[in-house]
Length: 167
Image 1 (cartoon, rainbow, N blue to C red):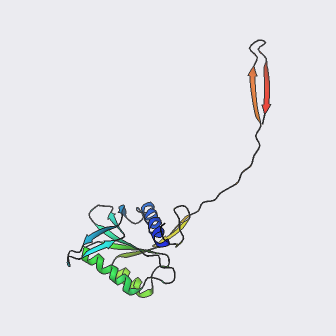
Image 2: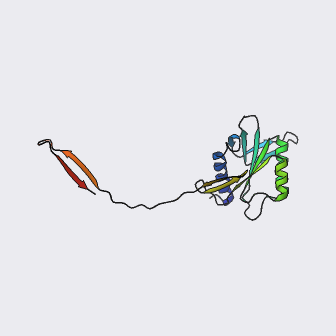
Image 3: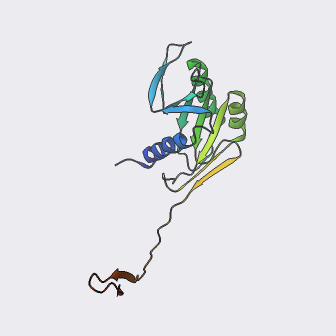
């Protein structure tokens, strides 16, 4: 059975796919390994976004931290992976967003913070980024009804119409 953080990553990938146009992406690819161009280091990333033009990528990191915002150090480490892989930028997905120092690092390194509620599902979610808010809600309704069916028929013998009613 998948843990909460694994479910969060699955839901985040689904929701990012739904809003990819708003993120200027034409595709989102899943977990993979990229090799840094400067260091030759292999980096495992949660996902990769392909730009609308198809000539650039953004790295996607998903972190379900429910007690604190993303720190400056964590965003700086992510910024280095972006730099080493020559990506155009990054997307950090988390429930609580960024600390103030982390926001400065993100802004300087073309990292977008996408906040997805920790308990989101594909049907019930909140997604916040770049002053935009997307909300999904589902509801179950119990409906009880009684219907009356009325049928008019023409008698083949006499040609007159008669009515049948039922429930």
